[in-house]
Length: 494
Image (cartoon, one colour):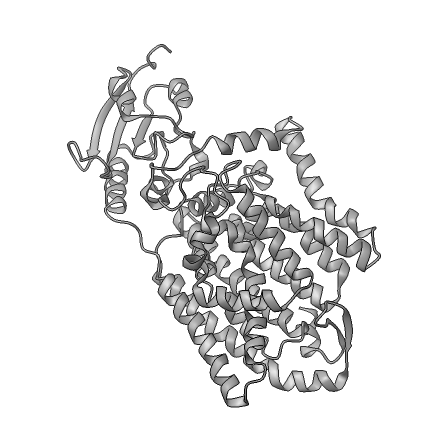
């Protein structure tokens, strides 16, 4: 880490209030070294305890996509296409690739991936603190806490998401930017679209910065190279130069509204530019938003432009091209919010006596911690869905062992300890092609647009025989049920 930022920097460069680089003198650095290293270490220790507690207190990820991504990672070596898959994304797989070498089952692999997510989240907090120090903040450890105490980051650390990797890479890029290592900074920014593609919009203000502020237009080639290489590789894999248009149409066809009660706040593919403003207090916390708004109002530099561009693109995309409105989609804003919140606290302290400034500082930190604990309780598996899925998986496992099956629900794979990548998805087309003997796990996610398998279709099809229901019998509308069918002959009309 550049010798821990050159031993909390005896010499180097940082940006002043206007964003212009100024030298850091050795005398200044000496005082910084005494006053800032220990508080930052203490802040990271506190966050480590919080994240360890949350990790061991949670028994599920934020959403089931984390399960699928974890299974993708475990099959990445035997299915190399998963390394460049547009849904899994290169940086959604590569940072977790060590888990693919472990001789572990689905459950053990998922726990290993969750642990890596926690480590990456804490690493992002370290980079945020180092960036704040290099940007000249009096208490850079507040930036580390402002990032670590964000409910959204804490909850995503219990899963496997490309947004977590984006956060750590973005925090690293911001630190390198403040450190003045332009080429390394550009390389980090160049990798960001490989985690969340829509944030390629960051290239626009960064290109302006490189050309007109740094006078280094050649670095634009480095900035574009990883994204262009990924696009060309996928063009070869998919044999379609316009694969991004095709993929966008596929994602836009998915509408989760009304099919899963855990997605009630998503509101399907409804175009709503204000959606993220509605959910921001619940996913970031009111104290963080307040301090960040103060910082944004008082600070105008390249980081401000980054924030406005990223927030703007997410608002415009809501409801378009499959951008359904998950809270984690705006997690990439977390490092910037942390830095602006730390700046905001400093601005509020200006003009106060030392005692009042300390009271405000600690009051602000405690409010961030309280909001985090209130908004991000440990994630528990939903009931009765989990009990029913376990019962169905146990029934199938005890009677039919390793027989082939298909499902729209990765939790079934998880409880069977079998990988999502090893069998075909539940779709009408796959059911028609499947040979007799295939088992079908049907639940309320199966009629979704990406599966389109209704319960009535299977009940009326003579080639499928119902074998079991969990719970038995009919259930009221809205109640969860898993129904098992077995294919006994060719599909109707097939």
